Image (cartoon, rainbow, N blue to C red; front, side):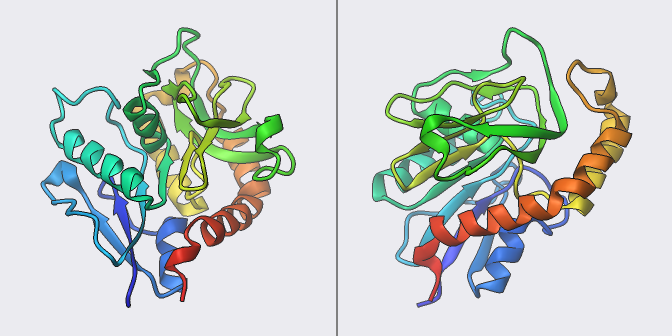
Length: 235
């Protein structure tokens, strides 16, 4: 039976991220849906091997302002209940935490992470993060670790960078799915939005230096995580 990964996306950019390319390399259908454009997310079916909730510009708690988020929460709940692996990336991780009753939103310190930042494993995260590693980041919101979850990693500016709930739920504050081409698009938009004026944000020169230095390792790490987390999708 053909398998699919439901990819809940919050933008209209090119689908050249590492989840999409991983699906293509393993003959898994990347079932991209955009609830914000009216796409139905459907239901849990036998061919559904996993769910990825991508990052975006929507606040995890803004269901009244953005009613489509309610359908995304419905799917997150249904997948978690059915034991379907669910991975959240940035906004997606914040949504999982919020769904589980934890805080998600802007922290009091007001810092941003936009660039490539060192992420350090906690004692409970050394299996997933054998050593500190740099990852792409683009956020100023955060999440608390949900009850029953394991805190996996932190950075200097944001204490909560990753969590797991058993072996079927993962939340990453950072963007391991991002490629050099994708991050360069973000850099161009960062200039438009004035994001380089925010506290904690790296300069474009520093972003480029760290991106070129760490992108390959980020990609290798994430492919390994995808292989393990979505193993049921593989033939």
